[in-house]
Image (cartoon, rainbow, N blue to C red; front, side):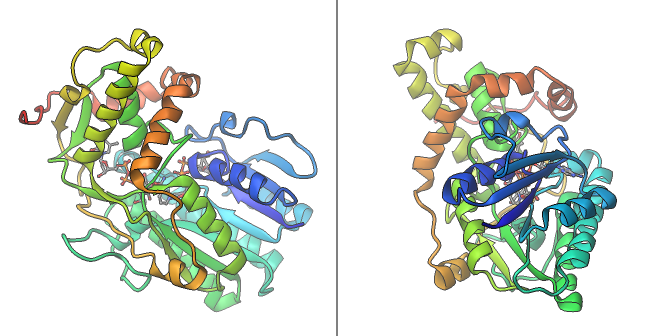
Length: 367
Ligand code: NAD
Ligand code: DAU
């Protein structure tokens, strides 16, 4: 039995990871530490019961006493750090919290791990990071593990800083640390501020669909369950001190993703009388698309070269984007309670700040 401390385990990827590990390795003890910020949601972990296999602790990774106490009591074999402020737009509105959690919080966790793990190679520290640390790509090429760091947003810069700390703790203190850099995730339990859930929910409700700039920005989409299986692989097989890129091999332009979501929801509503009654809408939802003022410093293109994961470990994505996005749309349609509760709360304050003055954007040309 391994004891795995999962920080940020009530967020989008963290909760998917906890649920994934519960099934894949039922013998492991999972200890979730999460501050439950706006993005943390215990509803994501419903069905898990406190006991020998699982504990939830509400707390801040910046709290050294708390974190050290957890290390002493639980004696984890593995730490997986998901805890972070994760939304680029929020980092532009207010970067302070990103520095606090993503840099200082990671530092605090590393200090606690150093004191407890030392240079024991059997005790692993997995730091979950992002492809955004590499900056923006032109039309060709993809980020490899050797691509120099060039972060462009306060969010990306804060993640880059934490990646450097992780690297330094391995080189200086021998901590068996590994960093993973992944591309854009999507799937169940993603907070509605992010592109895919935001567009699904707005399209269902017949609200305008705000596409930043010209909609030609490209992201490499990774289904969250594929990401979880990659982290599971890295825990078991990853080499200490290494970094691993994890991607979806699914580059898509934002405008194409939004168009596809519109078509999928139009089709579902046409086939489902109850859904059509709940969310009446005439015509194609593509008519809701609006090009709005761009995100400042908006990175043009991300693409991950995940050859290292594929060659070293035989890891790969389980299905193609078109299949996973359909499943994702279905999940949001079938789990309306989950997101209705979120969007009826303080989230709407953020939505007004972010989109209120922007919605006068133009619709795409017909055809
Ligand atoms: P999220 O915002 O959905 O969840 C973050 C979680 O961390 C929340 O549960 C929140 O309550 C918790 N948290 C925040 N501050 C905390 C603190 N100080 N102490 C303890 N808990 C705290 O994020 P996500 O999308 O699940 O991302 C998880 C990790 O993966 C992040 O490190 C992010 O940078 C990285 N990542 C995300 C993506 C993506 O597409 N979502 C892609 C690449 C990397
Ligand atoms: O690449 C990995 C990163 O992916 C993670 O590190 C971040 O935590 C995660 O939030 C995500 O960052 P992005 O900025 O790429 O994701 P977001 O969903 O915010 O935006 C995806 C693209 O869609 C981006 O080009 C901006 C655009 N966009 C986003 C929103 C919210 C729009 O056009 N309109 C929108 O309303």
